[in-house]
Length: 127
Image (tube, rainbow, N blue to C red; front, side, top):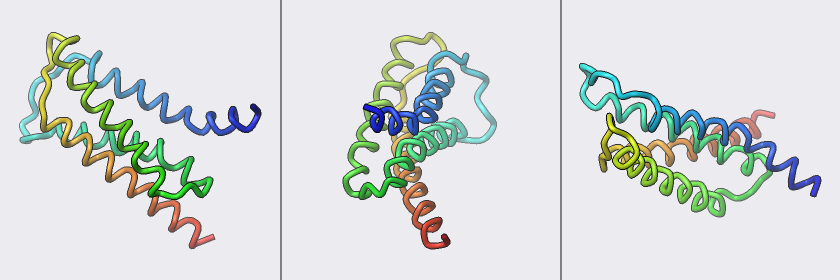
């Protein structure tokens, strides 16, 4: 039981970041469109990249193989990407669902997994 709790503590930052994502994607009022085309896609990319890093890093740090970890992390990100877009369409008045947002979410998630994997590998090679 003690080991399980100590492992779950490593995922508290990911849970807190998910709360930030809920706020940004559902609760924060939509602002005026940016003058930069597709700027909102960059926000989706960044939110999911950071979340994927926070989900991936603890398991990689414990030497779990990336090929075992990747389906779970990307699956969770895909579920949240689709769920957040459906939530924007059904639960908010100022937002809408866009397929390209979900694409940006998943590209960010894949990038985050790769950043975590390479960052930890570089750290271990350095130490």
